[in-house]
Image 1: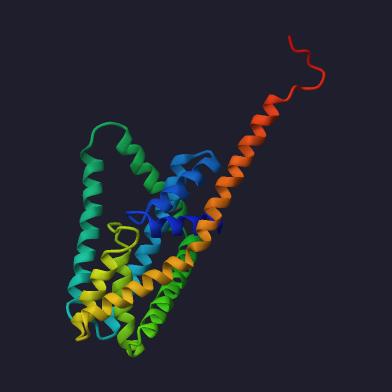
Image 2: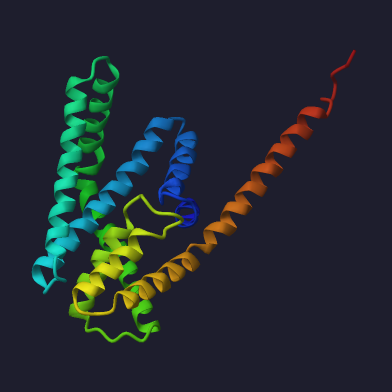
Length: 246
């Protein structure tokens, strides 16, 4: 839990939106003695969560009246994802050497042994769905704080589209794509683009406040590691009883 809070705080305050996950992956890999496995586990965790989020967004857009043009946006997202997967497959096929083969074996092993296994995928779907619902709840609070009145059936597609855009790892300290998507989505349904940006900003502030325990844990963790290092240095400096020093 502490590692997750730390990663969310770093994701919300550093460019890219993924550096906290990288930090968590490195710490996890060092803890288990396998850096590659730690990096892959966190990467699969984030990828599977965002896949569930994208599927939920598509389902809501198909079931509820969507913002104008949002279906085209989702088609573009799906096409980009398919193109990315196809590019990776082509590179693995064409690149010489043993490294691509090792990567392919690792990906296949991870998919079969964890992500797509019967004992894991249901938990992934449930946990990811609950996380998305939590973000939607914060978005609804942001809407209410700004005084905007929207029925839930109209608000839900907007929230999912904005949240999906905010997952793009091309932001500055969490800001950028979310506000742009909010301006576009709210303007597409006849609302004010400025209103959408305001809601997105309020959501960003609320989300940042929610990650502040991670800052406390980050500082506490550094202090604990510093104390451990000082204790180790002191123990090495103390003479061992019964040993005669020249």
